[in-house]
Amino acid sequence: MARIVHNLYWADYWVPLSTRPKQSAKSPRIHDLRHTHASWLMCGMTAAEH
Image 1 (cartoon, rainbow, N blue to C red):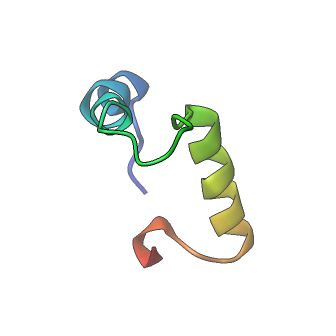
Image 2 (image 1 turned 60 degrees about the vertical axis):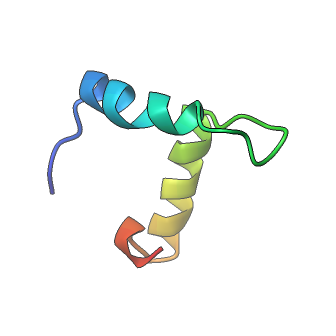
C-alpha cells in the first residue's frame, strides 16, 4: 500500500475536487472522506470497488 503524503494529496487532489462547481449545498470536508473510508473498511470494501 502506498503512503499518501498530505501536502501532495491536498494540493493535487483535494483542492481541485473541493472547488468544482457544487452539486449539493454542502461542501465536502476532509473529515467526511475519513468517515467514508472507515465505512468502506468496515464493510470489507476498497476504494477501487466504488
